[in-house]
Length: 201
Image 1: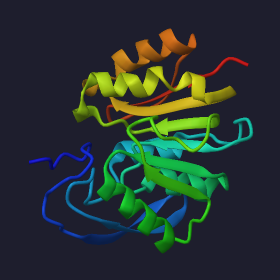
Image 2 (image 1 turned 120 degrees about the vertical axis):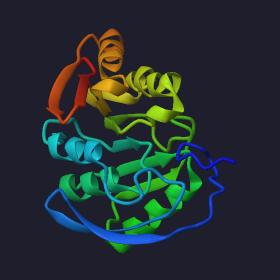
Image 3 (image 1 turned 45 degrees about the vertical axis):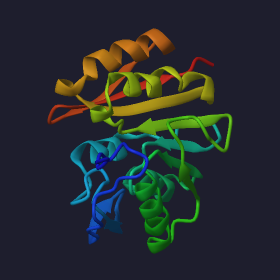
């Protein structure tokens, strides 16, 4: 059985759901399914990341959402920032839902496709990378997202992730500081840490 949300092809029986949720000051309509992360509603960590993400200070360029799931973070940031957001996930079911949700919410400034972390990106440089990483996939996967982000960022670009304290935020904070030479706790909310590193100019 491969029913985890971080597998390529979840084989759980389809169980479609449809609901609305307000993100970035707009009411979004989402279709979700079994075998994807947080299918019953936008998880609290993603909401904190969206609310605390500052795109105004970024250099020019795309935003990359790694582990986009059915799309809440990427779609909300595309809407709020007006930037193109490339959204990737290893889970093909989640990617199909994200494409559907982009169309449903008339968000056109997105490029949504499958990718195992950074393996098959459509660009080489990004103004920002955001992620609500798949903690259950293990520390190695999470730290790959952190350690391989820096070369993909333009100078002044940022890596922003959300991780619960009890699920490895201190370890991720240390790793980001090692890689970037800086890390900031942008927000702490109900045990969720928003961590941000900036690529040196």
